[in-house]
Length: 314
Image (cartoon, rainbow, N blue to C red; front, side, top):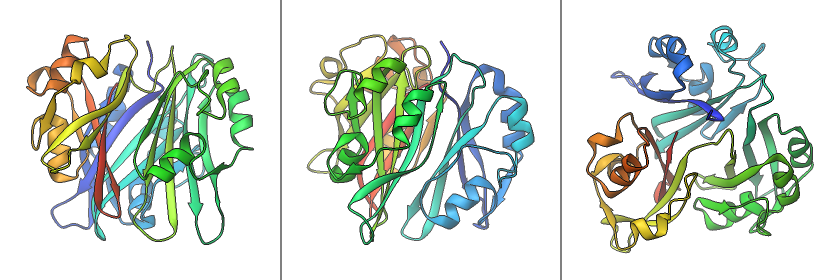
């Protein structure tokens, strides 16, 4: 089974705070040489994709590396990478990290979607597509590029209204997913939307749509802080193996600092864990029992307030 997202990278400020340096990653097995190249990279403010996301203050998507500011473009093309999304994480105006998601195909077997949607409330009541990468799902792409969402409608619109991540299962059959017919024809199984806002009039939504043969993740989970803000409780999830995550996590919590999820919760920081079998959290144990090893955790902030953490297992 191949993953639609082929590499996930984490970039953090260096000691001087003037550049972003490599801080870990999760890669397909055939991308070890690209990992080595990334480990040596350094991005100043407004330089390269991580630096551009830092300067812009919001997520950025690049669906074509040719003649772009993606500094590792030649190496990326050698390994079949052609699209990247950068998601910055801030503490006020201070950059804390940038998460990079890299995709690419050139082969018909890659089906899925990674999209960036945007709304400026001063200019429009609708959310429109900034750009997206769809692999071989060309019919789904055509319809998506002519689609707009009102607040509360469709996957991006629901995440926009909630100000928190939204996961929809069986998107080919679910009425809440407005592009269900095209999704069904493309073999897509679930969708995850992550909103991004620092306050003001602008909201972005990153939409990740997964197909059975080339999933975005083998398992995806959304956890929310409890009422006392002391622990995380499970809200929703999807597992390609069919595991009943609601039953597995019923009555369970994850404390601050406990495993990758608890670390992201405590520090409002993305975490990439390369070996969940070394963790003791309930989420790590459940993942390990399903044969999953890596975990990527992203905190979802709205105007610097933690709304949820999203975990996915490549």
